Picture 1: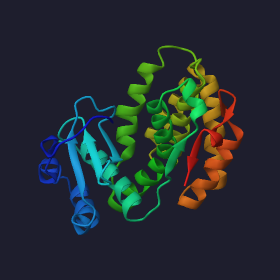
Picture 2: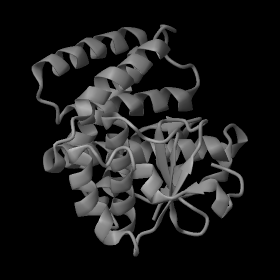
Picture 3: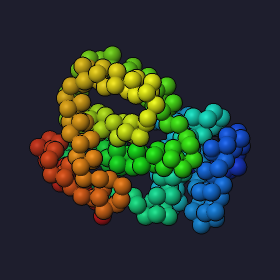
Length: 260
């Protein structure tokens, strides 16, 4: 995100949770995970109608975490996504289990922008971290991520699949592959037979419409399963394995993005 923010741009956290604290799962999560650290791990909250997803988090220029929401949360799905972003903040600021991609190779900027590379780095982080976050929320607090996977993610992706071909641009195609790998890792924790039926049907549609992205995504998924990705050290190893195998514009990914 770009642009200067003032204190007037932000919304009080009590306003953010006002309509979702009524959901038992969120209340249990919030009281156990967020309340005890509110003073030592501040979060700035912002409503941004043009937010790419319903909720995104980042570290602000002042080092304070920022969570942006498309609108004030109201539904149980909204509550799940708010909890999801809070866990990301906890993993970064408290657990120190967050892959930090700090630099970009200038040579790739001849074709892509800094924002392109920022999005690329964010997608890599999401591929590693989102499955961990969702599994934690499901196992410890009883959230049901499958509901959102089916009713939001699959439906929105199906709209994009109306164009029946892989992206011709290498970066866009690799982003599509990472989306598939992340989604496959997230679905590993789902046990409901009806939900899994819809996931397997989606996989078949994705393979028909995005065969190359599906192929690369399946490779990324297997690499993650074989290497493991549930700690920062494992994620570093996995990043280097992926970065050594795949290239963008003839440059190995590990020579495009750098991690601490």
